[in-house]
Amino acid sequence: MSQPRDPSAFLADGVVDPGEGEELLRLASADNFRDVAGPGYPTEDGGAVRRGVFYRSNELRLSDEDSSALADLGLRHVVDLRSQPEIDRHPDPEIAGADWVHFDVIGIPMEEVAGLTDRAGAVDVMHRVYRSFVETETSRTAFGELFRHLATGGPQLYHCTAGKDRTGWVSALLLHIAGVDDATIESDYLLTNQLTASSRARAEGSLRHHLGPDAVEVFEPTLVADIEYLRTAYESVEKEYGDRATYLREGLGLDDATIGALRELLVTRS
Image (cartoon, rainbow, N blue to C red; front, side):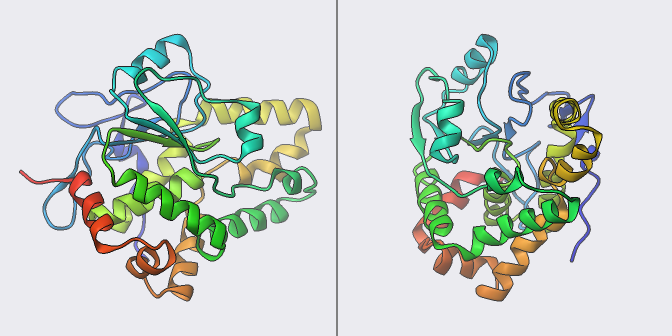
């Protein structure tokens, strides 16, 4: 297994660095918002991932300024991967010009997390979540519908609650479809931990205040992107389908035309 590159290589002064001095859009009220392309990640066939096509985020509890910034992107769709109870707690705001689309993907079972008493239990929950992306039919169906929707063209934004698990898996697969190497994909996945450091610290502070200092140690595995979680999903793919290409075709039901359309949207060549 390749080793992820240092995620800080993609950061400059807290901003993903696209090179040549041009900053990518960052949102103060949705700190895990970013372009799926990063700075224009290189592909293994000599191309680069095209920016401005797909965006990813945590939930959109937006300031007026950030709502305007998203509207300025000219989004066609905002795609919500959360469950209905998650949506009911914090509905997405309307983004001018963008239609809202919903694909319900099973995420972290919060009712189970609430009863955790040790860190090992939290780690086990997270590994089961990532296995479910591959092994659970309802998740595969939702992901398949999502990818077919994304293949209709950008710009589109997709998100879940924290923007790290469901959203992270989708982003890893899109970068794989584009032909980005695994070390870069894993580094991009881990960027969540740097971009969300402040909001995660607030969450940990709330846990400490309401449940005591031991709660942070217990629940911390559910708050971070851990490369072992992503690799658990990869291992499930290998076990069930042999490779990611077969998972995309047989597990998610994506035909060659859909995968080809996604690749055309994602990759630019000079």
